Structures are given as structure tokens and as C-alpha cells.
Image 1: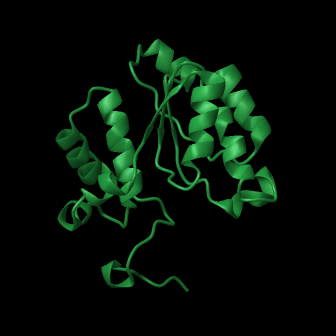
Image 2 (image 1 turned 30 degrees about the vertical axis):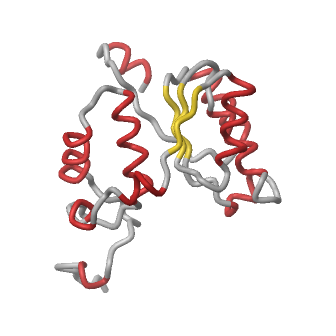
Image 3 (image 1 turned 90 degrees about the horizontal axis):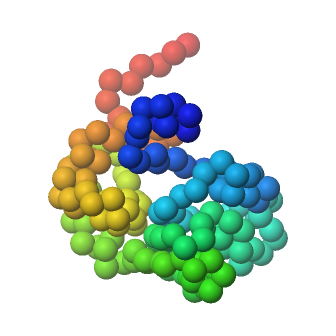
Length: 168
């Protein structure tokens, strides 16, 4: 994909990695990619089997995604200090935290435009990334809501499921 992106002279290449295996993080972030802007979210302790036995082990692995002298956007409030220290102190990277204020500014009618339940912190994080990419906030929010395609396992309300058929 990176070779194709280079051939197409792309300006922006967005990619996602779930970051479960620390060895893969190092390969991806130090050998394959050189991110100008990184985002970190969801440092919850349910990945302990891959990243360590304690909840605090998760954000200790996540700094592997942080490039030197770049920008880091974080939507984690509980692990913010650990991530900020790793970025600023160890890598010279600036951090911007997206928190409850940015998430609460997304009103229920805005969130209702999405075709599924999207977490307000995730939307706020993407909007912060759009600011870094010089994309207008209102335009980005509209495009996300209009063009989001839900994954198969996305959270929906049973009352919203329409035209379901049973396969026997």
C-alpha cells in the first residue's frame, strides 16, 4: 500500500494498527512508516495477554507508535501522563489531548447523523487530526457522518436493525 501511495503521489496516508504485539509496533513504526502525526486511543487493560499483566503496561507499549519530533494526538485521559511523558521527554514529540470537553461539544443531533453508535472521543480525536491536516472542522464532521461505513461487528441498537433475514 505504501508503494502504491507513493506512485499515486498521495499527500496523506492514513493507516491503523491495533498495536497488540510490541514487536510488530517496532517493525511498523520504525522500519515501515515515519508518521508526522500519530494518534493513540483505547489503552484499556484488556490486551494484557499481548502487552503485559498490568493495566500500566499498556501505555508503556504504546509509545512505540510515537515518532521522534512529531505530533501525538491522544484521547486517553487515564493514561495521559504516561503517554505525554514518553512523547515529550523521550521523543521530543508534542502532544495534544482530546478530552471530555471536545467529546461533549458533539451534540446528540451530530452524533445521530452517524449510521451507528460512534464514541464521541473517537470523533473528537479525528477532528483534532483534521486540524493538523488543515481540514475544516465542519467539513470533516459532515464527511465522517455521510461516508462512514460500519464494520460488520459495529455497535447498533436492536431497534435500528432493519430488513434482517434469517438464514437457515
